[in-house]
Amino acid sequence: MMAIVTCLIGLQFGHAIIHFKDHKERIVQWMIASFCLLALAFSLDFYGMHMNKSLYTPSYTCITAGTAGVMFTGVYVLVDIYGYRKPTLVME
Image (cartoon, rainbow, N blue to C red; front, side, top):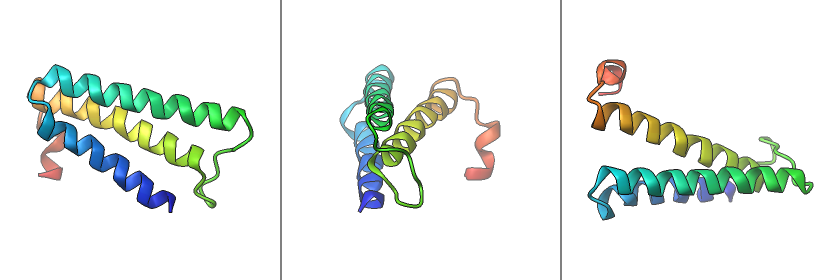
């Protein structure tokens, strides 16, 4: 179930590419969502729902999706804004 939620969160990050045309708007949307997910993950962990990959808890889902969002934003800035494509040639 939580794997589906992670996939849907990733889908929402992809929708920002279509719905927002400016780089700044996309970055702001992704960072807000990522930091909210990370804050939710740590608050869930603090209140007793510990991160456990084998059980795929909601806190684990939020931390992985939030971290992936921050990393995705970083790669987007490096590649699409600054044009630094060398490290990503393998992915092309």
